[in-house]
Image (cartoon, rainbow, N blue to C red):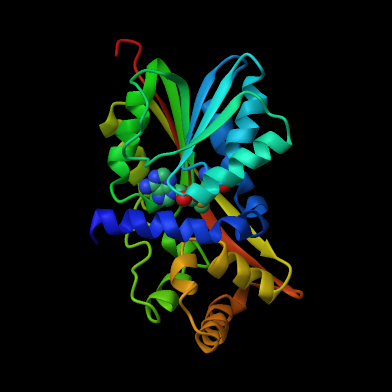
Length: 275
Ligand SMILES: C[S@@+](CC[C@H](N)C(=O)[O-])C[C@H]1O[C@@H](n2cnc3c(N)ncnc32)[C@H](O)[C@@H]1O
């Protein structure tokens, strides 16, 4: 797919998903975000860049970890995500944080500016994720550290049928290469190729828990990457697509809701001191 088109789909799709995002995903993504923050080894006083920050779930945690002597910049391609993140930070009175709209492959940030760069569950949506990893490397100071989390192997993500279910109704190819980075050593390799050293990689198994079929559908259709295509569905298409998706996760039913398996890959590495 044309990279420009993919960026537009992401930008306007996440604008649509922004309001439903946290209800559908904040708990479900927290183990990946926590492991990524652990591997980032944040310390008081550091400067941190959070790429594809969404509503700021990670950036706000990072702001607490680096304390008032440190600072965090969150960037995202979606205006709506950036606005939501800004308003949450101001409601909570967090002073050491700011948010800007930016493409992960083209960070408007000078070289060597940050101690740490992170990106949680964002790189699957970027047309050329390897170039985004090179950008993370570029914006770090010598000796700086980056940590990234992505979804893991497709066969271990029980919700993965959402993509063909949506694509068969609205031909948008929302995320053509969604699971590429989660396979084998792809993300680790991207780190090594970008110049990172001492690269470590972890796979985490998780369960995505939803209390009801409605909550499972709301998260996956309205609060995630397919939100733009879903917005164009008629009511009948919505009903049929929900039924098809629920059939695809039927084996993960638990009580009145679902416990859907998932896998994350988390990778971290250092920029060399001699850069
Ligand atoms: C699943 S959300 C993750 C948000 C956040 N990092 C978190 O952990 O909650 C994915 C985010 O990636 C952003 N995104 C997609 N493509 C992007 C790109 N090319 N550049 C920057 N952000 C992008 C979306 O707008 C969305 O906010």
